Length: 187
Image (cartoon, rainbow, N blue to C red):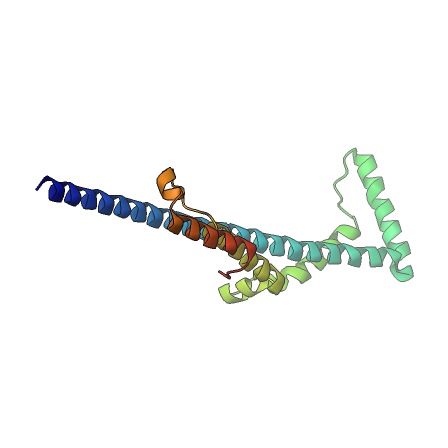
């Protein structure tokens, strides 16, 4: 009778240990998944911000190049220099440079306004398309996520019991997991 009770207690403890292990692994998996999703969203947000900065940089550089062309153009060069000189004289005489008659500032402002005019009133879809990730950026995000997935799948569960670690089934499982890291098994 004592043997049957002891065996049933052992079965109960074994079931509880398995249930606890599976519950913990489920929570670890959910945490890993949420971490991967969070990392992907951060990377995507950074790429979108980078794309926006690049677009703004193109607008600023293009506008500045247009001003440079106006300065180098022989037809407008002398007129720009005279107006700049007069503006500088006004600033010196008043003791404060206000750029009131600066010939280049209005040119730069109008050029920038013309370049950003098409950005005003964009729909959400058009804005999304403007800032969307390039194929290379999407490939990088996917590769980074794939690496995180393989790294997670390639980790052996944290088990501290030496009896379990020395068991043949655990060693076979551990060998299979290490093969994932070597690329023998695709995730």
